[in-house]
Length: 302
Image 1 (spheres, rainbow, N blue to C red):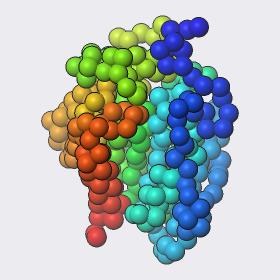
Image 2: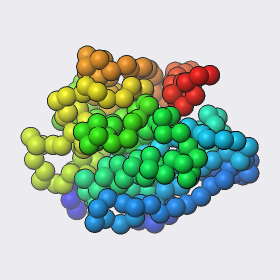
Image 3: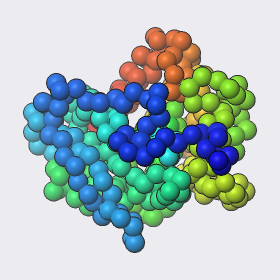
């Protein structure tokens, strides 16, 4: 057994590709009745397979909608978009918007850079096909939680560096940002509940390889490695107080601010990463802040 598998066991592939204790957030029948849900396969990166996406659009919506590109979490090596269908359906109905949820390739079978390249290909497709899917490319938000936060930040960097589509907001929820594992919150979460420091180390080994050169990590893998954070989209960043990823998310927010990027930051005390919170009030407030930030970017004139 590899060190990565010892630290972060990957369940057998199939279905949601979820660990045994993960409860999929599946859309309810009531949500499904209000939505048009479509599966598509869109062009992937050059020389790579097509990328599967799930699209959610409110049936009652009329006219051109803003678009939310969702890059799901799962430590880069687990879960599928359908495991978060309740979240996608909820956003589509709450905000009203077109949600495009990306089924990017998973590590370790497909290590970096497969994941972010798939996600960037999806961004390009959404922007290029805005008229066909009736969305407004000026109101395009990229979001994700945990590993999806890393992918969202990476896609924002890629779009800047490659002169790609304009992103109205990068919304990062409890994001993975740094592979150096040297923050106080990492030390505080050793052996902790939910996703802990040991799992975090295993995740990076799955994603980048057992013997990867930590001195040469790409910022498209770990966005904290980016030396230049100027000319990026505004950011909404939510961290959890008991999460090993807490400090790297906060540090990234502060660096973005120092680079002149508008940032809204909320840290939820008493909240873990992948475990029920000890402070339900803070968890509810974090969700309100995040959704209000999404709403402001998706519907700026409201």
